[in-house]
Length: 68
Image (cartoon, rainbow, N blue to C red; front, side, top):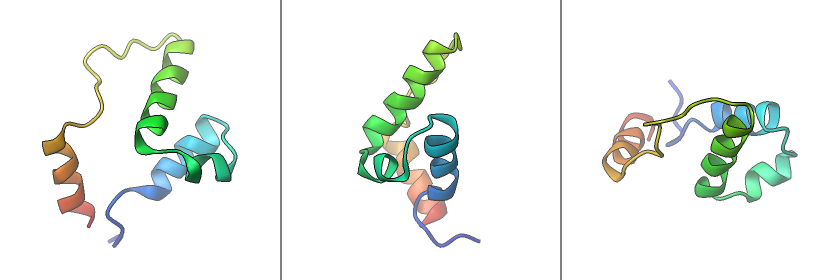
């Protein structure tokens, strides 16, 4: 089991592989910038994300509880 509080490796694959960010761009981004980047990329690709909001405070706490 991964001991990190967040799924960083998965997020890195999305940021670097999917968004084509340089590693430095990924690490310099805030979580808000990262998730907005994903949303913008998906909109540009024509993906309908209706109802797919960023995690709520409760959901984020659950992620931290699960991964950290």
